Image 1 (cartoon, helix red, strand yellow):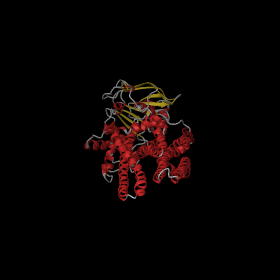
Image 2 (tube, helix red, strand yellow; image 1 turned 90 degrees about the vertical axis):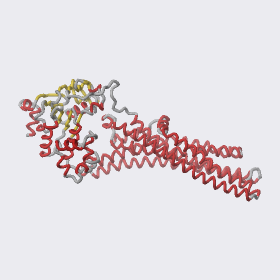
Image 3 (cartoon, one colour; image 1 turned 135 degrees about the vertical axis):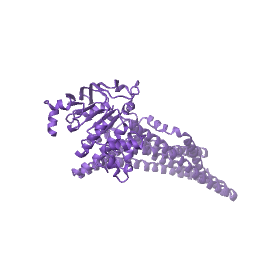
Image 4 (cartoon, rainbow, N blue to C red; image 1 turned 180 degrees about the horizontal axis):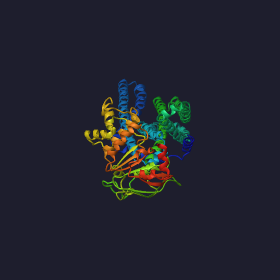
Length: 588
């Protein structure tokens, strides 16, 4: 937790954001530039009709009313109403079209971000809390939606409105206009003063939201552990801390903006007061008509309204840029990539060799130290050893979830570092101790690794691992929804479905990582029976604590502190002193 807080604080004092972030965000609009261009045209018409209203009133006062021309007055009233009707139509059109552009652009960005995350190496997720990653895909992209959908409309529309007001005011009375603009330096100074403070504040807000999501995800995932250890109060206290930090960050940003916006109002009031005082003197002295004074008062009020809007957009823009900075930091992180000369691994028989393989998750902390072994195609290897010996690391390297620090892993003579990751993993079936079932039906979970499989093949795989009887006993059989992580099934049932999923894929290499550790004795017996079918003519690696599950293996290696200390078959290893016999005696 302290690390999280420190990380957020360091971000808060980062340098001003690179303008490239904004350009990258706007690049997602390019595919929808036709719609965006039409929206821009409607924005221009919306600004024009907004400007037309006060000018029509000014003409009506100075000509129709002053001259007693009723027909001209009627015409101008009609034009005034028409201008407002057109303003409503063009405003609606441009807002709808920009919302369409914004949501389509963010849809593309969110899809790109998700697809990128799917290809990220395990090392990325080792260092990033799940809740923080989720915040990038949800909260941060939502902030960008607001900026593109509404922010761009305000920026373009209000800028056009300001330019139009300036041009008309200068054309009507340049002296009065210049006097009105004397408040602009004060306005510019205020905006500059608050700019960097607001940016840092919203960077911090995004970090704190990510911390809240991270804590929430962790607390929900571990709710069973929390309740079993009666740690509800402690968890509540931890969440209260990150929630309060998020609250404080938001309130600080709001305080900054709450000072900024009223200050703009005061500057606006000062501008109107200047126009009323100087323009009023001009009218009294008959130097300008009263309609011109009305026009200046109206335009001056409207002049500061777009500035107030732009200040609010600035608030949204800073939040969006801070979010974009976080999103692009993820997108710019290199995903898993094949080597430049990677080849497609052909269908393999399953001959496997580890040659002096070393690996460290962190520098100077080797988990595997020169591990070497060989398997003939169709053989079964069992890997045993104490916790932390490096058993699962062997699996991670073979699947290329991580890359070996040195040494080679050969599959049918091909160095797996030189083959494409997808062609390698397509030939592997992996069953873990912590079986993951997706929120969906039993059928969808079994077919996950081979969606094109037939109904008959799916049922045959389920029958082979003794899963068919309990599946048929479920309310809707294979169409029963198992919920997230298969929470409605027992640990043994989830494991049997995972076995069916692996068998249906018919992999050349089968990996069972503590696959029977969380099942009862009866289910383990069923799995042992299924394994006799599953392992035939298939190269297999079994990692297990229960030595009863590996007695039939063609080869057993014993790992201790990243090194192979014993190698042989069950009968040989059980007859000599060593860790294997010690482990065997403890389980008997």
